[in-house]
Structures are given as structure tokens and as C-alpha cells.
Image (cartoon, rainbow, N blue to C red; front, side, top):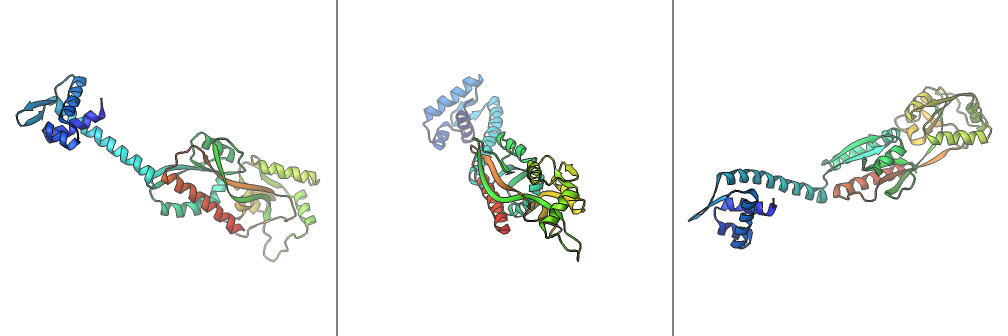
Length: 302
């Protein structure tokens, strides 16, 4: 069924006159007559009764008018919604990131962005950086915050700030002297449990670097999550292998680097999204806000 013919039919029914309907539609009356006949032929019915003063609907015409009004109204709303997505800050998006990264990035970002763009809806998706990257490629996530992402032909990668995985210990009690000598830090690594997240490859890299320096911890305590590593380190159970920003958030001064001369693993946190993603106004606003907030974290650390 031709939607143009349906619109012609709707205007004719409202006007009750073929000539008046043709004038409103900006077409000739013969063109309108042909369109109505095509519609009647398609439906195998008569839609209008021709009278001396115009036309009036038949019973089947009444039924079609009811459906046509609903259908054309739905189409109009759809057009308005689509145009709104293109020109207004309206839309729904999924942000993906690792839980620990999100724990220090998202609270500050979300509190400001949700106020600034109240018509943009956000959903959060958590997983390791590799899983977030895969979800972006598969279009399950719109924007990903990932650590040390590998290049991919379908992705745009925007580095936004730096971090590093390092050795941390609980801060000494008030009045107790901190370990300032490298020899003392190495001794703690050899004698205390080393707590790390086994699935975080940077942890294994640091273990390998220690081995090259002939520093072998007496006990390895592997965990599945950086937050658990952080909690156990805060409980003074050993030396924790933790990203610096994860160690810092929410625990001001309670964790400190074991020693600045020890090896660490640099991290780059990037914003990733598909190169062919639909760039609506809302998508561009969200992308720019994520990048800007990430860069502000980098500037504050510097």
C-alpha cells in the first residue's frame, strides 16, 4: 500500500471534496482521482461515495481512515524521533569499562554528565579491557574505556590519560618510620606475601621483572580482582600489585608505593569506539565528554 496514496485519502476524507483536497495537497484533481482509484483497486473496495456537493466515506472507507490515521501518526512520530536523534542531545548509549577503572572514573563523570545532558540515557557494562574492546567491536557497547588497547581496523582509539601498575603497601602507623631504603623494600618483597590479580597481565610482567633482579617473593597470593588485592593490602597482609589510580581512590594516604626505584608497568587508558558508529549529536556530546573528563584526570595527576 502506497503511503502517499494513504495521505491523499486522509486529506480527501477530511475535506469531503476532491477539488478541495487536491488544492490542499498541491496536486491536480485528476492525479488525486487516479491515486484514490489505485487505492480502491488495491483493497478491492469503494472508499468514497461521489455526491453532488463532494464525497463521503463508505463503511470500508471509515475503517481505512481509522487505520490510516493511526499509521500516519505513528510514522510522523517516528520521523520526529529520528530527526531528534540527529539534531538534539537525545539517545541511549552503553559505556563499557573494567570495574576498577570505572570505580574511580565513572562517579565524577556521571555526576556531572547526567546533569548536563539529562535526555541522554547511559547504561554501564563491566568486564576486562579485552572483553570491553570485543564488545565495542561487536556493537554491544558504544564507548569503551580500556587499558593498553591493541589496534583494530574497526576502532578509533583516543588515549586520554596515563596510569601505572606498581607495588603498594599499607601506610605505616602514625609515628612508625616508613621504609626509605631500596634494600628494605626488596627485603619486604622477598619476605612478605605478594598479592596480585592473576588475570591482570601487568602483574605477571612485574613478577618477571623481579625475577630478573633475583627478587623472589616467599609467597604469592593470587586473587581474581584488583579490589580484593587492594583490600588485602590495606589490611597489611603483604605487598599489593595495584594500578596507582586504583590504590589512590577512596583511600587517601592509606596506601603508598613501596619504593620509587622499583619497577612499575606503565598503562595508557583510552577511549575506544567503532569508526563507523552513527555520529548523532548525542553520541558526539558523550564522546567529547568522556575524552575531556579523562584528560582532566591526567592533568590533575600531572
